[in-house]
Length: 152
Image (cartoon, rainbow, N blue to C red):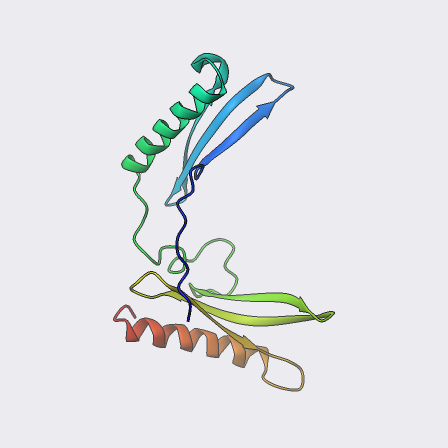
């Protein structure tokens, strides 16, 4: 299995805002932690131009990340969010088109101790495995993987 190398993104958590109607120009810094959005708008006009406001935005981002550090690994996959319809963290139903046909699968996700993300898919069809069986397999696979890592 290949391990993805993380890229450091210079503009992570920073977005450009050019809103003509209200004459708002600047950078918006947003950091989401535990469901709370921490944000600040840095105006070009107040800071003396686009490059100066970007420099200020990067400083604000550094301060927000210091105040609200990134959670430990597995945060996203170990919480049930409002969008989760499976009622199990790290398990979801997904679909995609292949060769003109739409396929749905149940997926199990988890993160290994070295930070590698793992995803296993379980398909279902009218002539094969049932949807309930695919969901049960996804749940069981994730539980087994977490138990093997000592987290289950």
